[in-house]
Each structure stands twice: as C-alpha cells, then as structure tokens.
Image (cartoon, rainbow, N blue to C red; front, top):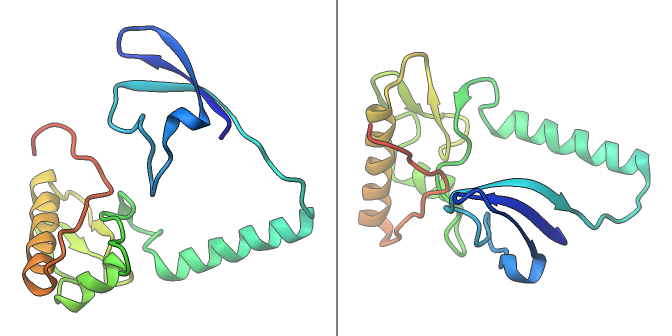
Length: 153
C-alpha cells in the first residue's frame, strides 16, 4: 500500500501515505476509526502468472483443510501472541469443541467460533470470554481479540 484515500466521520475526504498509516500485525492506525476507505494505491511486483496461480490454489487448499470455511464464522477470533499460535493455546486449555447454545469453538481450528444456525451474540461472546479466561489462567497470556464487537449482545 502506497497511499489511501478515505472518507472521515465528518464527511471529509482525506489522503495519507504509507508512512502515516503505521502498518502492524493485522492493522494500521485507521483501524477502529470511523472511516470508509475509498481508494488504495498498491505497489505490485511482476511475477510468473502460472506460479502465482499455483500458489493461490495451494493456499486455498490449505485453508480448506485447516479452517472451517464450510461453516458460518467470523474468521480468526484472536491475534497470535508473540511466539505462540492462538489456536494451539485454545486447544491446550480444552476449549476446542466447547459450545454454548448454537455457537461452537471449531473442532477444525480452535481460533474460529462457528454458528451452527441461530447462535446468539451472547453465546458467542460467552465463548470468547471463556477462552480468554482459560488461556490467562493456564498460561498467563492475555489474548488480544482480532474481531471487533459492535453494540451490545
């Protein structure tokens, strides 16, 4: 990303460069702000089409195997703490397969909570908090949420 044009909450169009975006793990300084990204300029490298298509197919196949893409979910729930995988920590505390109502910690990848049809926000939030508590108690690690909760459950 070289630069981004966005609409602010005050209905102003602004443009900023890569150096002002402060990219980090899964975010930048626009995250959490009331903005709508209108345009982004990307700097891409030329590559071999067949190699790129093969790599994309390979990545998709790996995700199909490891992640519950066939179920309704919101993606990864937690960021990986430095030196750890959130999914592995969640497994180690026995939360894989844990359920509440129609919400369930995926048995395929423990960092995903799936909606088995009619799960409430309250049930999903209960599982998130239960995972946070178990990981903190067992490993002393505070998991950081990757998802953002909007509104009240």
